Image (cartoon, rainbow, N blue to C red; front, side, top):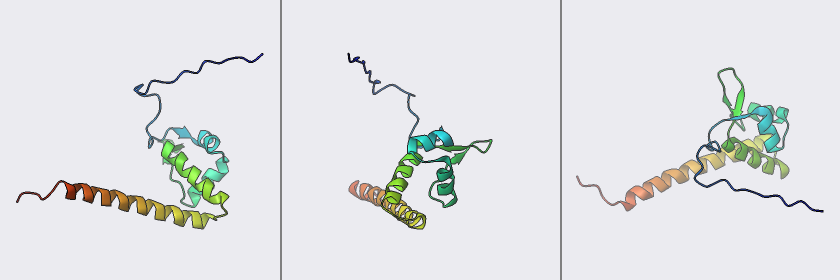
Length: 118
């Protein structure tokens, strides 16, 4: 006989249930499990400059949801056969591209507001 389980959704306006995307809350073992990689792999990625976890006052690595998303990107690139040096270069270019897009969007928004009175 199959058991029917009730699933409940958290209200969209429920504050404080999930950390902000950039808030570093996950310990290295939790981040490794969530990312599907080993703890030593996370340390290797850090050594190669692919990921930059925040350090607590005691020196413990803390990872954010943004870090986990970056780890997923690293895993996808590694799965395509890209080596760590290549992954580092790709991530640097993607980061630079994102920064340029933000800057371009800010300039476009400023321009659309019209000329400033002198």
